[in-house]
Every structure is written in C-alpha cells, then in structure tokens.
Length: 344
Image 1 (cartoon, helix red, strand yellow):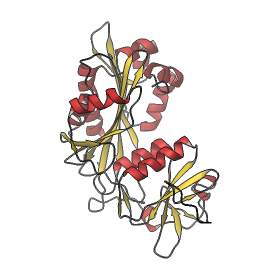
Image 2 (image 1 turned 90 degrees about the vertical axis):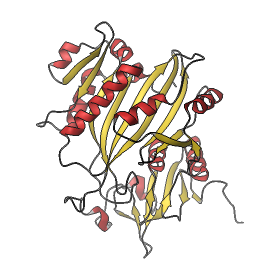
Image 3 (image 1 turned 180 degrees about the vertical axis):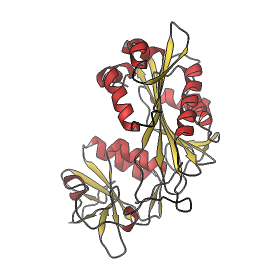
Image 4 (image 1 turned 90 degrees about the horizontal axis):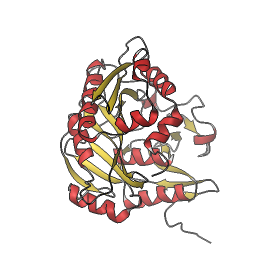
C-alpha cells in the first residue's frame, strides 16, 4: 500500500525528510509545517536538496532552531552532508558519523581567500528584551532599531512564510502578537538590501519577552574585524539606550550570495560584542570592577541602573575564547535565568 505523509517525503522511526527541488529554497508554508511536525514529534528533520541549491536566511535560521540536517545530492547521485561536505552512504550518517570520511564536495576543500573570491559576510544579531504587557506596548521597533544601527536598510516586508508579501507595519505586528499570545510563531522581516529578522514574542511573569534574531548584509567578508567590533559595539549601545535589552549579541558570519547559503566551506561564525541591560546586570549580580580586570567592558546608562557592554577586541586571544571566558565568569545558568530562556 502506498502511504502518503502529509508533510514529509520520507520518514523513519527517528527522522523525517523534506525533499526540495528548487534552486533557491525558501521558508514556504509546507517547509515550515514539516519543521514544526518534526520538532513536535521529536524527529530529526532532514532537508534534501541538490548540490547547487541555495537556502534563504529564514530557512537557515529555522533549520538551526529545529536542529535540522542538510543532505545534498550531486548530478551523479552521490549524497553529501550539506553542512560539512563529506559524502554519506545513508541519511543516518548525518547524525551517527558527522564529519567522517575522505571524499568531500569540491566546494568544501578551499576557503575564499582573495578579494576576487571573497564571499559576503553578515553581521548576525540575537537580542532579548522585556516590555510591560500594556496597551501601548509595540512589537517590531526593536528589530527596526537594531538593523538600522548595524547599517542595514529599513525593513519593508514581513510574513509568517516566504515569500514575504505584507508591508512591514509595527501596528499590524503588534496586533498579530497579541492574538497569538502566550507565544508567537516566528514572524519574518526583510529589507531591500537583504537584511533580515526573525521575531518572537512570549508572555512571561514580567510582561512580554521579545527576541529578535537576524542579520545585516555586508558587501564582503572583512580582512580585519576591528572595525566591525566597533560597529557591533555602537549598535548595541544604541539599543541599550532606547530599549534596555536584557541581553544581546552581535557576531560575524560568512555567506555565499548576499545572505543566502550554499553547501560550501565557511569561516566559523565569530562573536564581536555583547550587551547586558540593567535587568540583566541586576539579576546576574554583576561585579563590573572584577570583570573589567579580565574583559574589555564599558558601563553605559545611569550609574544606579547601568548596562554593561563587552567587546571581544583582544587581538592576542581568539574571539570564541574571549566569549567563553566571559560566559564562564558570569555563569551559564545565571544567564539563562536572567534572560528568561526556556520560560517564554
């Protein structure tokens, strides 16, 4: 008997597969439904495409949230891990033998190193901010401010799925968020220059928690990141003054065409700066003087209710090493408790 699954093209006891034939894969309603189904059923979602496929930034974010895996097939029928480039014999190799083997897609064997080959970059951001659950509370202005502060074009379109067709309007977004409480699904926003944002809103004991996660496109991946550390720091300082976020991050990632991603080698995403707002500083009981002895820290705002800006600017220490050291000094469990993560 031929059984047709409502959202998956192939499935097993612990995984489900969505096959996409398009050259440009977007977060369509069927793909979003598939990812939601996989997460709900606690299955590993696998996206199957050709080696020449590009994923939209919204697909990349949704796959990351769902713990998704990417399999790509070449013209000769060989299948590869779309994230590492290694050839796989079965789909289970994606999670049982990740990064193993010798045969690899040619696009994963070299990084772009010359100006002619240099791929674009994206300033990624992830910000959490609490607001009062009041009649005048507005959703979407934090996204506008963050993208503008990082140098992106104004948001123009939004929607729950791609293609985004509705004109960006914070009044409409606010009404949608109210209707979907206690927690919204992802609301997607897009700028003319390819800058993008995923917006989530959830009710907490303190009001509402708004999370924005997205990126602002750069023309090229930089040779030196000192200027971007400054850009990231200034952007976080700007939103700290206006929105007092609980915590926010900015990092640098490499892409392929604009903000789209192909199955090809990338430089690892690296952190640039972090902001911890007054609520976070209070809840984490931060000793700024002690932290300043180890990290590049600036106190912003009022003396009694300051925000703390951390720049990962030490050229003699790796960027991830600086972030890990800072997180260790704060305590991961305390950070999660202060942001309300897991309790939206």
